[in-house]
Length: 354
Image 1 (cartoon, rainbow, N blue to C red):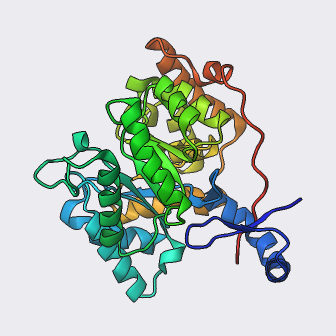
Image 2 (tube, helix red, strand yellow):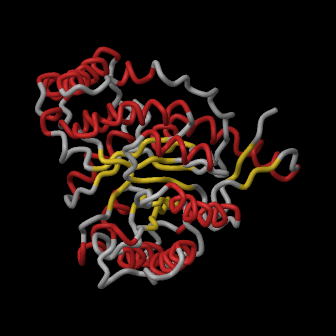
């Protein structure tokens, strides 16, 4: 049976056999069909049914420029914003100011945006600006952080709540995760995620014990972690989407490789466009934190322009560059890692509300 899902405030309100809903779907069907290809290029459904952009604007290290840059990014076409309740590296409050400005100007409404923020454990905070009581129980820390995020972002719900890193022990990590699960169950959070987790055993334990599985894993994508080949294969096998950060900064050797250079010369693309398109076609949802309006538009073109698609041999060529780097440093290649994990059956189709 086909299950239709309409995005409510948490993006996951499902219904079966609702007559009004069926009529809405029937009347919208021509538009759905005509727009489905474009929508698929720009958005992906996560394992909780949340509609997430395939390319997300990152706001770390933007400091006082955060409001203006977020406003520029959304005006350019970004619909996903990543931030954190961590004043040390993020100005979450200025992201909220940008959202208010954008709504006031009629550029977007809140429900058109995918907002992702994070609970950052004390180890990742500057004690002079920590947004919750670090002496409180872990459960209270998560709630104080979440409430601060709602206030900062001028919203009553978060599309994606991510733990910025595991805590020191699995037990403490699960204490924080249980609170996040309650927030998800309350409808105030659309999905959960984990960041900076490079130990596959820890990720496996999280999945074993979690009642609400992570929808996203957000990690630095670089050679020092072997490009997370085993974690990425594990994510694929469990319906988890891999978000990459530091994607360009950490990989100049890929951007300057002959394979990428040849594609750029033939297609007239930039190296960043080639690499972002490769990662998106591999199922990633990369973050980009560019401060250039020109680069914002270039980055967005890889998900908005249907001409931006890589041929099989081009995909294999870029994969070979990553494989060679992994093999040279003793890491398994992605194809080798895939042999360890058998992907689950794909989730049922979900039709978008129009």
